Length: 103
Figure 1: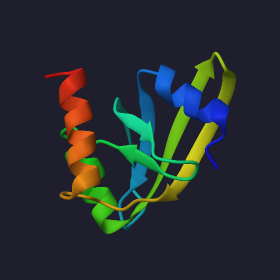
Figure 2: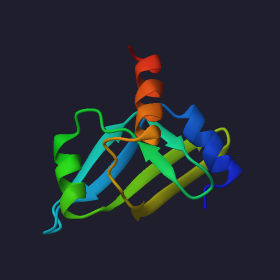
Figure 3: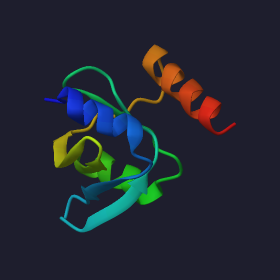
Figure 4: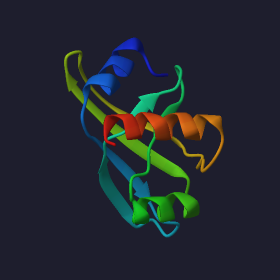
C-alpha cells in the first residue's frame, strides 16, 4: 500500500535504488529517476537505458524499490511483481512525462 507519505516521498525524491535479480539470482541495483505512483498499490518505473535491469525483469519479474525521505521522514522498501509495458495509453502518458522533464 502506497500511503500518502510514501506517495509524497516519491514526488520529492530525485533517485531511487531499484533492485532486480536474474533467473539464477544474480542481483543488480541501479538508480532510477522516473518513478510515479499510479494509485495506492501501483508504481510506474521508467526504463531509461537500463539494459541489465530490463533483461533481469524479463527473466524474473520481481523487484524492490528503496525510498528514503527526510520530509516526510521515512525509509521504506517496496517489493512487487513487475509488468513491462511497451505500448498503450499508460505507456504513452509516462513517456510524455519523461520527455517533459528532460526533453
